[in-house]
Image (cartoon, rainbow, N blue to C red; front, top):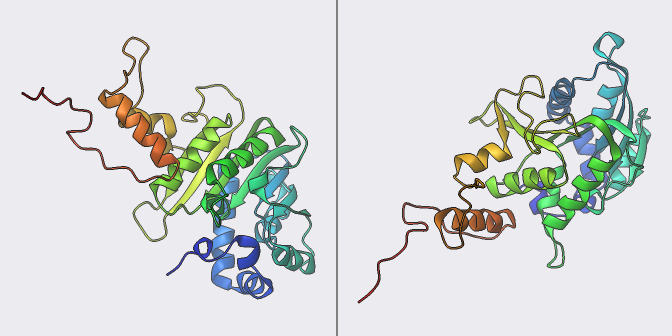
Length: 281
């Protein structure tokens, strides 16, 4: 079964027909609702907040934000942005309570610095990994998005982005772009190894700790995949006392990871990776 992002850009794929189908499907609505409640749980908001809904579509997640009861920290005020005019038209017809903005998140997040307390995104950011034409660079689109998102969140703010990466390359590309933008970042996987597996990129702005590492900062993140931890497990982190030298194993593996994060094909690592050959006689 083809993924939607492999067929057309989102503004073309979600036309009037697809937008109505998406919004009226009870299966999709239930899944969207479950993922939004999970994102709210990870945001851990204690009082009514101003939330940015990235890729808000027809406002399914926004309705939940508006209906959070006071004893759970709500209700929240929200602003939604989406690239599909048809999706936003459906949201207007449904008279959702949030303000709506037609915008391409790959071109940035056009709000004043520190405008939002938090942000959520459900099933949207994986679209940034696609390049419909040769002049589109997914890395640049991800960079503009995460830098804009980081800027528009207040210090101490948090964002949760549920996404469906096609492969580990996209997963690492998204996580790496978030860390480069300044976020503390980690990926939480619910129901790993099953067809119902869901990935949540949890992002923090400030709050101490090493850049990229949110272990111990976000409640319930015992099954967290932190970018720095992944590098250590792969033997890619260098100590100051023993820096990697050009041509050795650590240097080669770091370069291969950089190439893979750019979407290029690299050979798998083996016991021979970085091994020096004996002189030939």
